[in-house]
Length: 93
Image (cartoon, rainbow, N blue to C red):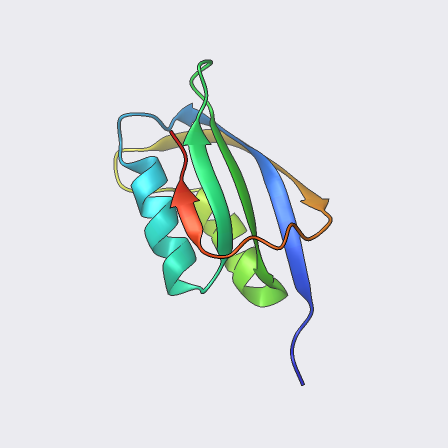
């Protein structure tokens, strides 16, 4: 029996650019077998969308609150979205 798949989309604020945040997010997503993407925004935030089995999605959501060493996360805003059917996880530029 497979677990329910969910999709989350949102924004991470704080010192999250120039600290390998996107690369580290991709590594975590790959480790958790999640699909989606991450990208920097002009306003200094990081935008992320990821989907997969609910426990893995929740684990990445919790990781986003910390991020990699060097990051100073001040806010994570995530909302559940319909599944996007994305395959793989990429860093968008």
